[in-house]
Image 1 (cartoon, rainbow, N blue to C red):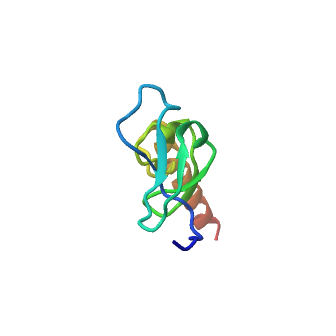
Image 2: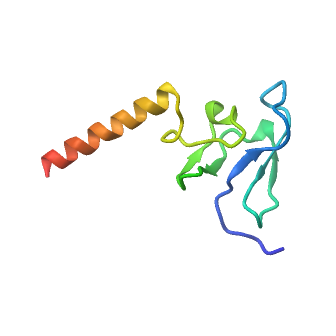
Length: 95
């Protein structure tokens, strides 16, 4: 199989483990065979379903398919989207 040049779209394999560092993760791109132990996945670059690249943190690691901060429904995600909206408004006004 040829080597692919892409950002992996990681997902957890199997059932949710009892401990966050147990189990395996894999790239769900159809032509990729990349796998990594769960203990090593934090800090790795992944691609969200929306197409944004992001670094997997402890919050993203809790999901089967991790999401970027813009797609998360958490307090931090909502706050981040609010800040981005405010910055876009300020930049539009100043132009």
